[in-house]
Image (cartoon, rainbow, N blue to C red; front, side):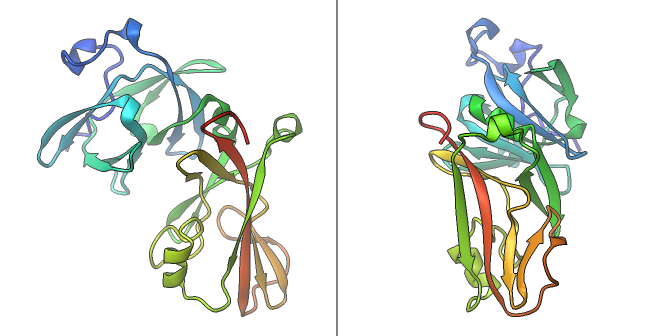
Length: 249
């Protein structure tokens, strides 16, 4: 099965068809690529359009309307999340993506790509320092080891969820920021909200159990505090905040 034609042809403008702009008129867009080995690359790309081979035909989508591209678990399909919240799925048929990074030009084979997200330029510092874990088969995201000179003055936010008298199903409805997947437990990850991006800070995922506070790593494993002993009273996660309407904070 072909691997999706979703991302565009940087080196062949003709593939985009007559509706696309010439390369000289395309502004660079800041994006982050998450690779299958867990590493991240943040930089600028000249992607113009996104093409999908969908079940109902071929689609050509302007890249400036796309917020996120990610492979499904089976690696056969990709899913587009649009800036307005709409979603599209299809098959990807593209060999590589060219990215201009702080370390120079990087060419990434799409077989190594897990997801691509549009980000504001000020968010690149966070995306390059994300670590990813797995909890119940789902990806977690945390900013780890952000240098003090970058962290200084950044806006932080603490989110708290009371878990004492609620079920996992209730928490998914009431607090999707911590329970984003129905039927599964806590999965802290980057929150892309209407006017900002919230980045979980590694080492701040803490759960208050009967014997005290337990601190979890990106895989949900305890690295500080007592063993979990029921009941579970609450969970707290701290975030760095990147505003999309006027810079950081």
